[in-house]
Image (cartoon, rainbow, N blue to C red; front, side, top):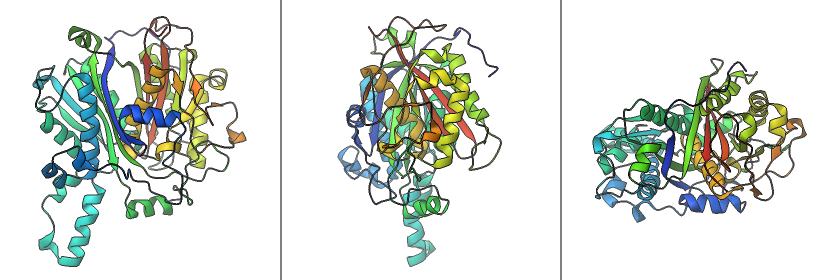
Amino acid sequence: MSETVRPRAREAVVVTGFGAVTPLGVGADVLHERAVAGASAAAGSRPAVRHADFAPADHLPRALVRRTDRFTHLALVAAGEALARAGHRPGGVPPWRPERVACVIGCGLGGTASFEAQREVYGAEGAEFVSPLMVPQMMANAAAAHLSMRYGFRGESLCVASACSSGAQAVGAGMRLLAAGAADAVVVGGAESAVSDVVAAAFANAGALSPGGTARPFDRDRDGFVIGEGAGILVLETASGAAGRDAEVLGTVRGYGATSDAHHVTAPDPTGGPAARAVALALREAATEPGELAYANAHGTGTALNDRLECEALRHALGAGVLAGLPLSSSKGALGHLFGAAGAVEAIVTLQALRHGTAPPTAGLRRPDPALGGLDLVRGAARKLTARAEGASGGGAGALVGLSTSFGFGGHNAALVLAVEGRS
């Protein structure tokens, strides 16, 4: 790669809150505990998994639930956890000026359930019975809009819609807003609930879904992904802003890189070059050497082609020697593919792994594909993580540094370098 490491010039961006709702349960701590235990909601006979235990009305006003789609429910509940951890609750006094809080939420497909429900009404009863709420329910920016309204945030509010890299790119966009001085805090992440029969049929007919409904990233018998739903939300601030209000720092977003394949709307670039460059750009912004990484959370969809090309991209970006000794796992064996939410949820998985010093295994991985040799796959049981020697980043003794990668239809590639500083 032509990118070279240089020291960071901008102020550090820190995470002061995160929250998650996934097929493993409600809460970021539940997500970590169950993932580390090897639990999976992506194994069985169904090609689509729904978070069956999540009842929106248990967490949100019923009137709001009736007027919004499930992906917005997921986003609001995850955001509630993240903001509470950052020191803010609905109706409370925010720790930031409302005009200085931005919202950037990724979503790949929008409110598919709301659209399908009204399409059935249209067919059975006629056009005059279609709900006028359908459009504000299904629009991809609904989660960002309702988040800003629920908490009274009046800074920039937008939706990143770049398929399966949406959540990761929302985190990157939040970093950029802070670096530009456009906000004091940015609520970022992704949300998706696209477990409908029609969506599943489309992916199945494209050969992307596992016929048996079991995700097996990096396994020699992998045959596709399963569809999950969920949301992951993070609160980002500058280090000085967080310190000024004595906020707990959960981690640091050191670097972000994004590229485009400019190749095909669904197939990744066969060289893996643009994906590798996204990783290199993230490391460069983070002023982090590949050898400093203690853990990598791969996109790892469980499809034959994507897993192979991702491994090639990582080998190109990090070097075969580094990759061979870097603990690596995919969350999609446990969660299924969360599409627009995947990158944000997996960023939280990565941060939690670094915070607790334990990497979750790849659920469903039984027999690693020998064609993907040279990987240090975490499988079967969780793995204790060890801090690597600090290079140009100078993040402090004992810092654990991780990489999270996300790739989406349309040739969107994104990578995040995350860290928990000062671990002893």
